[in-house]
Image (cartoon, rainbow, N blue to C red):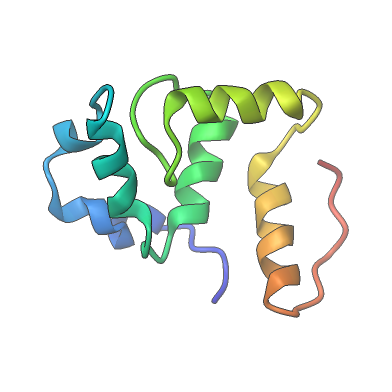
Length: 100
């Protein structure tokens, strides 16, 4: 499995209504469950973090959860590079050094 540039076409949520991902309260847990087995969950999350998307569930995280991640790591310049490297490491593949 490698980073997918065309991730949106493979997203599990593509089959659902867009409004299903832009909900509040307990409905967010249902929206997050759509992300559980998604093959491009990491790419989706990187997109939301890199672009500071404020609304909806992206990559299995709510806007509140993403804000907390961004506050914890304010100096990350590319979430995509960071998550891509972590994904490669988890799969046991060497990854070129990137500054994050």
